[in-house]
Image (cartoon, rainbow, N blue to C red; front, top):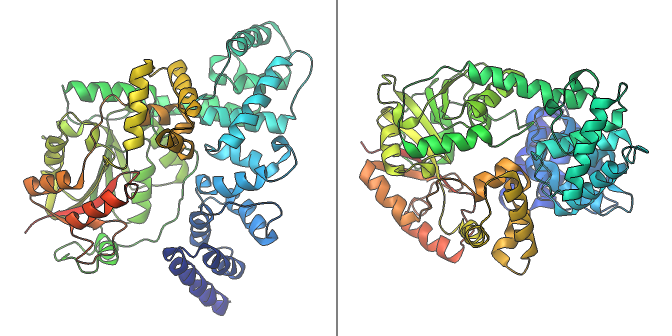
Length: 517
């Protein structure tokens, strides 16, 4: 038994090395061997999902890989979003209707499926079920429920014709006037509107839809309303940002990777940046601040990675915090404390933090440098920060889409976002706009609003970030993708690299810094 585990560990190490070399097929072969020897090792399943996202499959495929995909989709350690590409490509390569693909239907329930080849038949199937709801169940209930879950996961971002809108009203009236409502009526309605908008649906609709569309949102509202507040802020931009995320908490997610390689802050940073001067970092548990935690994914991942440490996670939006708290309780994570706060209003906080995480937040402030300075004042001596900022080059497709939005006058409403998506898709001749078909955020209402309609956004170049670090007195430790070498620490080098490879930081610049001295 121990020999099998030792062999599995070696196969997993080889897989990680092969992945770093972009040798995906060889990496998968090693990882499949690791899972055959140690199928109860949760970390290998998380590693499998990370690797599987690079595979576009065709039917028939290796039966071992197909079996692992099915098992990975049900594994609690796995982020099902990582399985979208292999599962959808496999489903689309088959001749059978998508509604009969059990693996794809399960995926629809568990994540946002970013694949136009799935969205189009899904929207058509939904419309068919609605058009025929009075006479028959146009879809098997298993398929109808899965489609309803996907529509709710995306916050009903899919296109809806005026005829469908009127038909939904007709369905709502029929449900209200009928004593024994057919189950497929509830499933069809849930594919267009949340069941929480129907009276009495809690007691008659399919149980999984009731849980997702009624009970969980109700619990989030309760938790968000009870969230303690820290400090105060009168910043007008913060108020606008908060209003956006109260309406559209971002991101909405169902499951995430829930197992990580753990270690102390010092151990993890030494592994990331072996040549950096990390003297004085605490070797044991640390106090962590997550500034702008949103719906909790980053905070939970940080809490699991630094499981012996204590976290304070703050956000402007109570709706986001209620979502984060519900998911934290669901996962049994006990070392996070949540609070509603504006990072600009924390000047009265006397506590100091060894590690502050602020990814995807500062660029939404009126004065990002001022907000960064406010956070820096909360660092303990020798503390570190992990920061994420938008790249001007990496977001050039977003800038192009914002030009289109201004030209066409699209508004950040449900109808405006749906119309914007259709306009972007109609411009397949524009290579920048065509990139949105690969973006997960393009496939949900809150994602589109955050991506394309944000009330405040700054984008940066690396020389600008270098100047900010100088103004704050921070030393650059490295990007998370860097190897820790002297060459990798040179932001001038990275700027030249990005000019030649503008998609290097397409998500954002994510990096670690530490106060000099």
